[in-house]
Amino acid sequence: MMGCGTGTIIEPRYINQLPPIRNRLNVTVQGEIGNTPKEQRREYTEISIQDNQVTISVGDSREGWVKSYQTLLEISTDERFSGEVQVFVDISDVRQAGETLKGFGGVANPVKLPILYQNCASILNKAVGRQLNSVECCLLIDQAAVTIVAGNIRRSAGMRQFRADDQLGATAKDNLWQQDAEGNWRIDPERDALRMANHTRVFHRKPTLEESIDAVRKQYYSGEGAIQWAGEAVARANIDLLPTSALKVDFLKAYEQGTAKDWLQEHHANLDADELEHRLARFGLNPCGK
Image 1 (cartoon, rainbow, N blue to C red):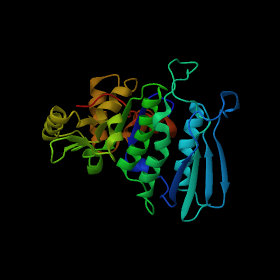
Image 2 (cartoon, helix red, strand yellow):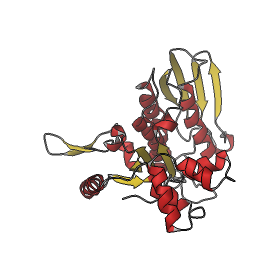
Image 3 (tube, one colour):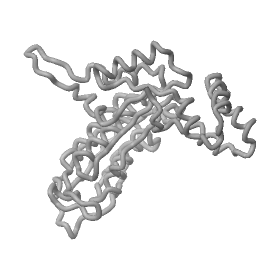
Image 4 (cartoon, rainbow, N blue to C red):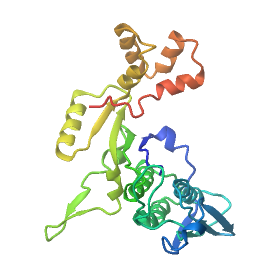
């Protein structure tokens, strides 16, 4: 939402920590963009809660947009509510299209902001009673990216990293464009936002030749299908601990066997638990793919 680009590892070990979606959201957008006079606009988002009703008054700032989006996500799992939650989103304080954006240039264009909340609610509502799956997590992030790209806050570049055996992630963009009976091409509206990011399948073992060829072939035909050998990425990102080829080869063998953490502890006993986890997670955004 801040327009700085997003890198997201959407693997089960992370998304399984998310709480299940428990509340169905009924979103109503109120007011008109630019209604509030400039000198009376609130800068930061304000939240009002009464029983099963929430009013989100969107602030006219990047922080304001972020808070309104984050609040909607939080409502979907908030245990203080029960059943359906009525969510009113007031956009009256948001500056109108064409007004100058101070500090980083350009002009405002909040054309996609009103539909952001309803699109996100639609994704969340489909998951009521369970945790979000990997593609739903991706879509929620990408809905924010769509809003930012349209809003001139800045370009938004995204990278989503799925586990190699995640079939939902691997096929999320398949047949994104479809042709109707008259020959007209149309993009699937429910998956349109996925275009905001590159999708990469992360292998925590060395991919086979066949898997690599299949990935390159898919990239050739669709532009998608990137894969990454996480062991190589982690090794390159920890070159200070692996200064020789022999050490790197030994580390990669340990990584494939699932003992990379033990290997680092044995060879670098001075690393504490937090640093170990950080170093092993360095495949995130690391451009060591195929």
